[in-house]
Amino acid sequence: MIKMEKIISYPLSAIYYLFFGIILVIFQVIQWICFNLFGYKAHKKSVDILNFFLVANTRLLGTRYKVSGLEKLPVETPLIIASNHQSLYDISTICWFMRKIHPKFISKIELGKGIPSISYNLNHGGSVLIDRKDPKQALSTIRIMAEYIETNKRSAVIFPEGTRSKTGKPRPFAENGLKILCKYAPSAYMVPVTINNSWKMTKWGFFPVGLGNRIELIIHDPVPVKSKPFAELFSETEQAVTGSITI
Image (cartoon, rainbow, N blue to C red; front, side):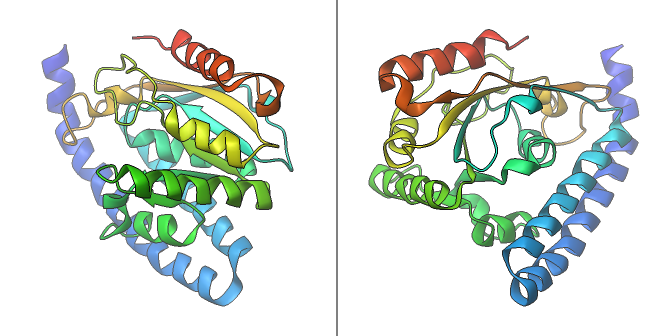
């Protein structure tokens, strides 16, 4: 059964990546026009539409989505989205389904160059790029993100595991990034988010892509960061995220 799925996936993955590349190239131009001629709101709208097409494109592979808890998200207030990380498909899933809260990402610096649309958005859309080999730069950059969401009432997405889990099994959370976000965005809410099954999209690597998966996005109850000591908030956040992961 697995061998047959993989055989079928080769031609479907080729078609998927063809459309994926076309989408990224087209929206590189659209983003540039929107950002340079019309400003943040137009650029944000173009990124929303980009992610709509990226999510829609995965349906060629039989991918389905289940999202719960969107109604819990506060509006007009800064949010810290703490999520587990299973694959690059986490990004487009969060961007599209949680678009109303203006999610911005704390991303590794390597993604800031050379990738059409994705690199442009990371550099111009409010996200920040950290050098994981330089802790001082990383923490100071996360502080900039915290101050940005505090001022503009937007959302910072952080993956406290630090790197992707290739099997879906969660890695231990690191606390430094979350601590900086909470300290410099004191009016924010912490929002634990669990992602399930996106790792199955890359279970054979980037090619071919896994077929027929249901990616699940679970938004847990938001908690004001001021409401409890950081150690307690951190522990409860990790438990909320990892407790809903299904392998």
